[in-house]
Length: 209
Image (cartoon, rainbow, N blue to C red):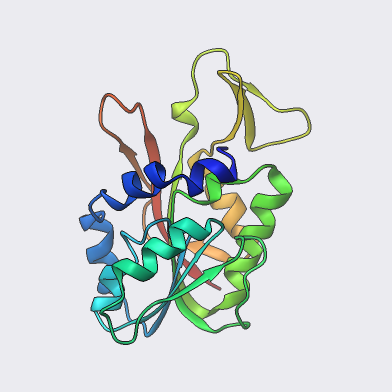
């Protein structure tokens, strides 16, 4: 996982700010019955702005102050403006059952170990009302290069190309979510990224049981 200096670097912030919203996912978000939504790991806010424009009350949470500053600037003209909050995915400063939905695009894969991943999922479930929805996109094990090895004592962490990374299979994702009573709502899709990126993501909707 890149360190804090990476996420707060102005070049990184602007790189993320230049990315267009994921239109397919955004359309799915704004089609949901909701009034309160969390963009978990909001980065520069590319997926924060659209639900806010759709009339939802949106909280944007990230661990990088520079990213949150960009969220505030991006959404400054919206009323109500999204609330930008500095916090980690494993310790959300939100009340139990206070949200209708959570959007988590490329965030859970930043976990530094199984315990953090499971804690983050438990926190997500805690802040969702029963029946609330979760949209997840995470990097898949299919991204791992040949020779990658599972980290000792970990199920979801792997040593690859000199780094330790969290990568999930569909079964892993269902299991991690299920441990916190988050159940699949439809098929989990495998989405390849641009050829140059070698990205492969898992995308799925879940419901809080």
